[in-house]
Length: 391
Image: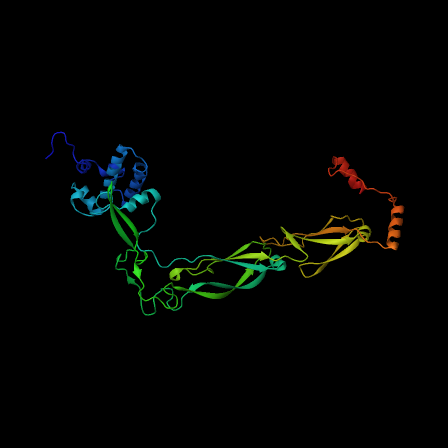
């Protein structure tokens, strides 16, 4: 019996409110539309987000509406004008009977995916292997064999994990769901949380007789030999992807990818800068003054002759176009060969050599030469043109 100043219980009040209107959905809304609408409202009305008492009450009303409309049986009773809370369905869960705390978590963090047992079969991890190559192999490409120690499908159980002649059985704790529920009381009512089954680790099945070869893992470690094609023009640190050549996943799942990282070994003569190959040639002072021809052994396994003109200075660069590294993108384009000249000044002279150099200095008027101080900065364009004509 209700006395004059007593308020109507909130459960009775909610029966006079339209649950569809509370959630902001049509009466023919699908279960997914109802769930999305509740998530949207829960993000702003939850007490942890908005501590206002009025908002707290509205959150409980919205939660009650979702509890009813998300349950097909309760929704049917509600649509027929009955009291869905009197049906007794779904007692002992959530914020009121039948509501799971997992839905609240989904509202804030998004759904974690399809609930239920997780599959034993999963994709394997990617693998990384570093492969040393010499400079010629990096420049012109090569095919090299590598040995890889990775997980492969167990041939005894074919990835199933169970011993031959046996099969997995349904977990008796979670009854194949892969999840177990626990109920706790809170200020909002009974809260039901869901976690993976501790007996089957969330798989929903138990392997009573694991395969003796792989211990139920569905994969074993094995050494394989693979041929790796190294494209022309690769540089140090370049990674080559071999799809499906990584390790096989648990339960015989699909293999990951294998990445081969190129490590270019230093060359005794040539060094690489971009697509150009560089080397340094030391010339005697006399050869630089008189001019000479330099013979170079290239990575193409041939020899080329480079002319150093008379008066070649130390630091001068001699360039052979199109004899460098091919472009990795393909085509016939190649970089250049760049020869850096270093002119060597003799440090030890015998008597005859000294006399000859002294005579040369006299002939050139350089007996008392003390050097000429110049600026690194040149003049304007006319000065540079004048210097070019004067050599």
